[in-house]
Image 1: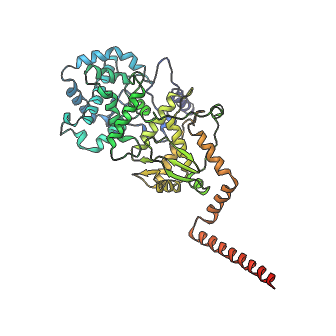
Image 2: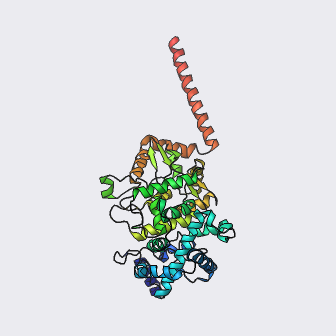
Image 3: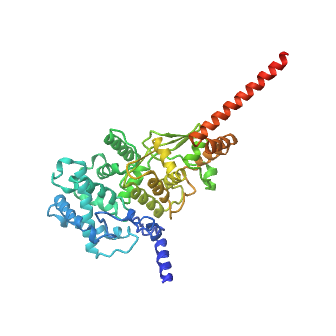
Amino acid sequence: MQHSEREDVSEDISITVIDSELECSIFRIHNLLRKVNESAYEPEIIAIGPYHHGKRDLMNMEGHKEQYQKLLLGQNIKKYVEAVGPLKEKAQKCYAKPINPSPQDFVNMMVLDGCFIIQLLLHFNRQNVRDNNDPIFKQDWILNSLQRDLMLLENQLPFFILCKLYETLELPNEGGGLISLALNFFIDLLPVQVSANKNGNALDNIRHLLDENRNPLDDIRHLLDLIHRFWSTSKLKPQNDVERSTGEYESIRCSTQLAEAGIKLEKFDRKDIFDIQFNNGSLQIPTLVIEDRTESFLRNLIAYEQYRGGGGDQINIVTDYVTFLGCLIKSEKDVTKLSRHGIIRHLVGEDEVISQMLNKLTVCIIGPSRNFHYAEIFGRLNIHCNRIVNRWMAKLRRNYCNTPWGIISITVACLLLILALLQTIFSILSWKSH
């Protein structure tokens, strides 16, 4: 029995390596990672693609898929099946696990799921084409669950299937077309602080992405990959040659200890959540907004980075960012401190729950690569904390200034010391005058 379990684990771990010849991009999460929080990788209401196809608790959404397909295609489904058919083998190679449906059933599934996604995006972005009685848009929880489920690594369609359907439908492609529709649909899922002009910010970021890549459709693998690229398109500063060659970094202290060492924690008003800065003793961090879908979203982005690999100069920015958070947050006290500074804004759960969730995000994943994005900041933070004066101040704050009575004791001691010093000075002056 033990022998068979070891074989299962080794099989699961072995598929984490991408076979470049097969061009796999849609993976099953291996058991070691799944066991940390299985629900984070499982769909709540909809199955997309073959991995979760046919599950009983997801069957209610199949009727909505068929309804959306009829609304989008009418009775001319054969035309779209024939358009997707030649892409069948290419699509099958995108999945790391064997595909169970027959070739024709697989094509039909690609068309059905693809049409549902496109129609969902159209209805979300164009209210005038939406049925007022559509239950997906009448109940917010359904739409929220769909946004979450469509970001699961196991719940993806090859992006070229969506592109082929969109092209065959002859839908307008101005302003980025399919990409613009998808990014606008998922913008609410990003755990970032947005201004009141949320839609304007989203459109600005979409235009930025399209400007950066003249052919944005060419190498996008699936919707999760699209959101990963969009969210991490900031100008990442490359590490210097020494940092890149060694790949070594020393972990930093938690936020409470950094504050004790005299480092000021500040909310950084930036659109790019990964843009963390350390200047003049101030650690500036953009606000992280945590809601009930955030853990699943981050876990699937991290899993995708782990499966796609990190060779060459590639930066696994989400993994690096969560590693940074894991160092800053060791207990609920750290969450409380960061919340008071506006760096963390959580809409669900107590501080202790948020602390446990963020600490578990990096369990059973490969640590930062040699291109660790925050290596330079880690180094400068540690240099600051290791200075003798800052270490003394940290000990003073930790041992004597951590309670009101401690502060009072220090104040009284200082006053007594000053009075004693003044008394000594007056005694000397009095002695000299005689």
